[in-house]
Each structure stands twice: as C-alpha cells, then as structure tokens.
Image 1 (cartoon, rainbow, N blue to C red):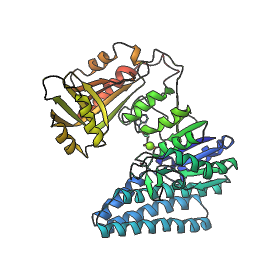
Image 2: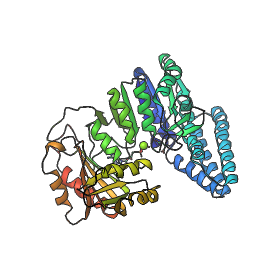
Image 3: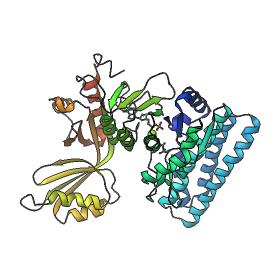
Image 4: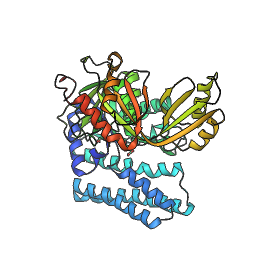
Length: 460
Ligand code: ADP
Ligand code: ASP
Ligand code: MG
C-alpha cells in the first residue's frame, strides 16, 4: 500500500478536488491511503476565529464561521448534483453550528486555552476530508472515511501534541488495516488526533505531512507521497528565488536538514518515521502530476560532484550569547547552559562555542525571561533578535574543502553573527540580520546553482 497526502492547495476548491481524485484513481492498484489537509487558508481562519471570540469580538468571529461554511458549501455545490448537495450542505451546516458553539463558549469565558484552539483548528481537516470522501464515492471509488481521532492517539500537549506510536500502531491495525485489506481507499485527516481520553488535539502547524509519515511507517507503506503545489523540493524557496531548480533525488539527511531549517515544503518531523522503516518519500505537484517530483531515499547513488543541494532559511531567530563569568571554563559550564534550555523546553537550533563562551539560536521566546534570569546566575548574557539562519545543505559538503570560503566570499559586505557546521557535516549554517536574508539567499543561489547543467541527474 502507499500513502498519498494532499496539502491545503491540493484540496482548496472543486477543481483541485476533481484533480486529486483522478490522481488517486490512477494509483488504485497500489492500495492508496489518502491523508488530507484543510482547504488552503482555513486553519488560519479557524485560529483567527478563536482569537476573535476570546477578545469578545463574537460577531466578527461568527461572521468568519459563516464565511468558512460558505466556502465549503460552494465547493460542494460545484462538485455534486442538487440532491447530494442538499444532503451534504446539512452536514456542513452542522460543522458550522458546532464551531459557533465553540465561539459562544470562548467568548463567555474570555479566555483561549490551547485545548480550545485545537478544537477550533480540527474543523478544517474534518470538513475537507468529509467533502473529498463523498466526492470519491460519487466517482465510484470505494472510499472509507476514518476519523483520525480514532487512531492518532497523542499526549496532552495541545497544539503540538506528540503521537503515542505504540497506541497508534495498535489502533491502525484494529481500525484501518482491515479496510485496506478489503480494498477500500481509506481517507483520513492529517494534523489532528485525540488524547487517550478522547479530547481533540493537533500535532503542530504543517503537521499533515507528519501524520502521513507516521501512518505510512506503521502500516509499512511502500511509498509516502506528499502532494503539494510545487514540483518537488527546490534548490531554494521559490518565493525568494524565482529560478530555483527542482532536486530530482536527495537523501533523508539532506531533506531533514532542509525541513528543520525552514523549508516549509516538508514538515521537519516527517522524515524520521520514513527513515526508520526506509520508506521512500516522494514530493509531487498535484497541479502537474506528470512531473516526477523529488524522491527522498536513504542513500541515493548520485554524483559526488554535487556538493550543495539546497539553501534554506529561517527568520524570527534570536541569538543568545553566553560568556562564563568564571576565569576559566568552569567544569560543567555547557551542561549548565543546556540544562536551562531543557528546563524551559526551548529548542536550540544552532550552537557556536569558544573556550569560555557559547552562542545559541532559538525561535521560541516564550520563556526567554526565565532563561535569561537563570543563565545570568553564572554567565554574562546578551541577546539580539530579528536574526535569520541561512543553511546550506549537501551530503558531500564534508568532503569538499572551500565551501565555507565560497559562501563568505559571496557576502563579504554582510555582517555574519555566527557560523556553525552541523555535526552531521551536511550543513553549514550562519546567522545574519533578518533584513538581509532574501539578498543573501539569492546571492548564494547564484553562486552555487547558476550552472548545474553538468548535474542533470540531480537538478531539473
Ligand atoms: P502544503 O499545503 O501542500 O503542505 P506548504 O505550503 O506547506 O504546502 O509547502 C509548499 C510550499 O513550500 C511551496 O509552495 C513553497 O512556497 C514553499 N517552499 C519553501 N522552501 C521550499 C523549497 N526548498 N522547495 C520547495 N518549496 C519550498
Ligand atoms: N492544516 C494544518 C495547517 O495549516 C496542517 C497542514 O496543512 O499540514 O497547519
Ligand atoms: Mg505543508
């Protein structure tokens, strides 16, 4: 069996849904399980609805609910005959009523908990999957809609809940596998799950990719297909670099590094379950299914001359520089520093050290005040925000001298705050002012990709 995950733009309107139905139909012999996201933009609107409700702007919130309802009803009307439309509109209206109920509850309380946010956010995937399932049926696909909350059991960290793999595995075997064995096209929602007590959770923004990978890994899929709105993983973010090239094949490590450093095309955690089971991941364009996309596998046999594969960047980064107040590098200094970040559950992205100092970058500043207070007990600390990390990724960086020099030469007029080469030796990342990020990415792209015509098996 294979997993086919369709992102927001791939289910954004009637045309997109017709289109993916054809794509799924072609894969029937391979027993597809379909994972869908919310229609593009709907998750943001749902979170905005929740925010408005909590600010006491109940009418505005209800108006937004009406517009979400209207959008889904319009899709239904364009896809189905009059009778089916009438029937499905009733169901969409029920979703909208439930959302209005949430708006009322939150506006009375005047407070918005992560748990309520997840309740709101879940409606996007629930509505899109409902429509897609019925459309599949109308096109004579044997479709079976499974609510992801019945198997994607998570912990209780609302808005970024962690799936409990053992439980999910068992539930998939009980609930989903028999339907696949019976030749159904199972369709389910990405992004959403449920606690063991049955309370709705979500697994983090962009999490549908992760849902797809978890299901694929646990069910032993032959292929995980991530269908989106670009031809695959590109040499850089196409919204910054207009002539970015498609990467035909890359390693799990390279893809993980790119995702982690901000390439939105793939959720960072997606790769891990696939790596563990060695399942290939394809990134494909649902608007151009004939394009073969990007294939991500453990060890591609590709040209060693290809040193740099892609350039990613992450904005909204804060740099913390920590200098030990003791004369000598006190025993346990680094340990003490990392203990503080660990205590406040703050992920450190990049690290650079010297004998008595360490600089780190973070993007979650929710606990910055506490972190600084504790660090100042044993170190002098300075903070600068509005920074960006730029990350150059390639499996062969480790055997290729001179890449760092090439990078720095291209940006001699730009102030670089911090440089670090990952332990995996497949990325070189550096920190700059946020305002320079697009310029830097474009210059580096030109430096490394302006002539890759001799690497036809890798770039297109
Ligand atoms: P989906 O809704 O299908 O999950 P996303 O918006 O999450 O789609 O991801 C696809 C988008 O990622 C692309 O439209 C593109 O703008 C952006 N992107 C950023 N970096 C890259 C990259 N290196 N390669 C391809 N796309 C990228
Ligand atoms: N709909 C969710 C989001 O917008 C999950 C996803 O699309 O992957 O974050
Ligand atoms: Mg996405």
